[in-house]
Length: 134
Image 1 (spheres, helix red, strand yellow):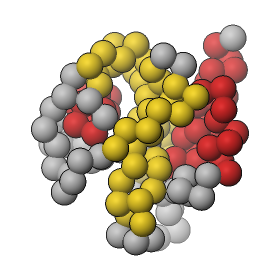
Image 2 (cartoon, rainbow, N blue to C red; image 1 turned 135 degrees about the vertical axis):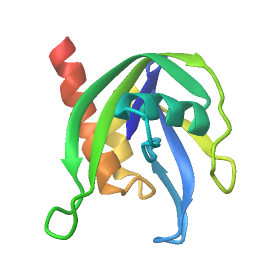
Image 3 (cartoon, rainbow, N blue to C red; image 1 turned 90 degrees about the vertical axis):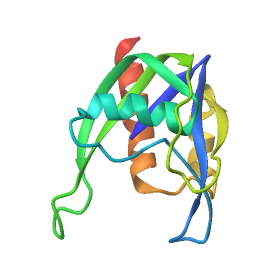
Image 4 (cartoon, helix red, strand yellow; image 1 turned 30 degrees about the vertical axis):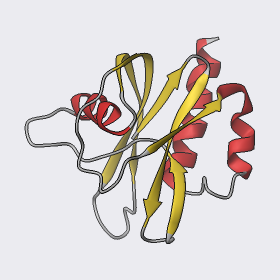
């Protein structure tokens, strides 16, 4: 999962989620293809889902998704120094990119469409990262 930051805004993806049968706001994410590193996959997914590549990618944390049931893990990155770049992805429909003011991140938590636990975790990790950079 990637938290893209561009011109003082978080770039969120609005995608249909079959599990909730509605459009959800979240951060770009995807699988690591064979032969790719997690960082390479993150930069590729950024380009496929939101139309930006990045010059600076920082790993924040690797999360276990449900360690009591299976061994799946997810790496959370912050992407900075973005530049326009688009790659064709495998999404069934175009993804709407929703810019959200970074300074208004707490209001994002109140948005009913921003409910995925991985995205919420990524938002808190990003705030911790940005606070430590100040």
